[in-house]
Length: 441
Length: 100
Ligand SMILES: Cc1cc2nc3c(=O)[nH]c(=O)nc-3n(C[C@H](O)[C@H](O)[C@H](O)COP(=O)(O)OP(=O)(O)OC[C@H]3O[C@@H](n4cnc5c(N)ncnc54)[C@H](O)[C@@H]3O)c2cc1C
Ligand code: SF4
Ligand code: SF4
Image 1: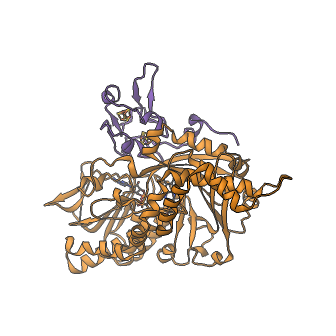
Image 2: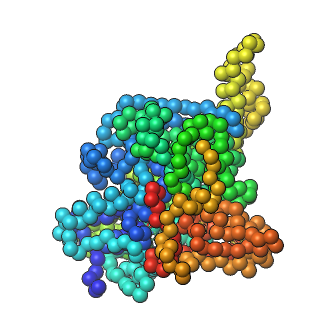
């Protein structure tokens, strides 16, 4: 094919699909390439897609009988755990029942495929209905560079040419490295392994157990014993008739503490409180995928160069500051912003850094980089053992004292707190954390 | 709920090109490095599909067949032994998630 595209998008994950939708709606001629059998077939998340950008891509998606999503979140819980106990902050509100929802749980194999169908619809309605494509089962081996400007891609022996390339290949960003935007070896320091099981129940059992109503759902994050001394945390999200239960665990920390992610997951599942929560289910899938931490030190040197943009987690755009993992919504927003920049570049017929640098500015002006920038301290704090070990232990110990009624004189809660702190941490460590925490949140 | 061991878990994964006996490995490991200078041999425990194993003599071996393409070993190996890539859709193995 010697036809030249306006843009080639590598990877039909959230970022690539959002970019493709935006290009299709603006009558651009593009090629979206995905190595999986279908969009989503290679992708793993927890996962809650936070925010409301989905409604921009697929207006009124909630009206569809069987849209690609599982449940909307109106119940959130943050749980601290020690080896025996859990202490939760729990918030549920009918405020979250209103559309557009502020978070929907998704299973990627279904969600991405559904979204790809919507992109195909948009292509069909565009001026390039016969000249824009979603091509699956194709792995991009190389970004073609001429004078350090991207001019297309190579797969096997075949080459496809374009004025621009959007790299939305996800966290394991081989092509980002090939074009020189990221070092060839990325150390384990700010990378985590996400590991999970999808566990099935009778739908009625699931709805009763988690107090779900219609398509409402719950998200629960865990800090502390969940990862057995390894930095990271746990999650439980409700799908239609399954739950997603898993962990994210620091790779460097596992290396140093000689821990296996699959053993950690079993330890988490064997926790007495988790055992009660998940009993009676049947595991239907086991999966794992690397996820970045949101630490800026792991980010590529730049998010653009001549002819090329990085969207989504290929640029390590992610935030995990304890109360939620945000990777999919960042991917979606950055895909949209990337495509908008490509549209401008086409108008100006300038695909060099001159125009493409506007993508970086748009990202900086959006909530994505604003949040990443302002919550760096919170991200660092989560990697502090005081935070993922001592604090959860202390909170649970306090909880045990506070809720124990054992026919002995009861101490004032201030006393209880003092004792718990003495046992699990020091005032000094907490002062440091508290001081940082107050600043960072 | 009973915990599953890794074999049971991997039994739930849908792999591609399962019928092909002759697949092209997408990851190459220089096990000479593993078995000479590597101080921790961490991939033998951080790989969630147990593709890196250690035999009774402490020798590290790599088998790509069960790999779920997570990427962990690419970061975990700081010894330069892992040459990591995605599987080829036609002649590689790799996964197709049913849920994801
Ligand atoms: C266990 C776990 C839990 C998570 N929980 C959450 C959560 O609750 N909420 C949240 O927002 N985020 C969560 N995340 C993070 C989230 O999954 C990612 O940030 C998000 O998927 C990034 O989207 P993306 O489009 O950038 O990349 P991806 O979704 O990884 O998509 C990249 C796509 O590119 C394709 N591709 C890559 N290379 C090539 C190539 N060479 N040729 C062709 N195609 C290629 C891939 O097959 C894939 O389809 C979680 C991650 C994990 C692992
Ligand atoms: S960490 Fe690298 S060098 Fe060490 S055993 Fe694993 S693959 Fe081999
Ligand atoms: S990519 Fe993941 S599953 Fe595959 S060998 Fe590496 S660590 Fe194991």
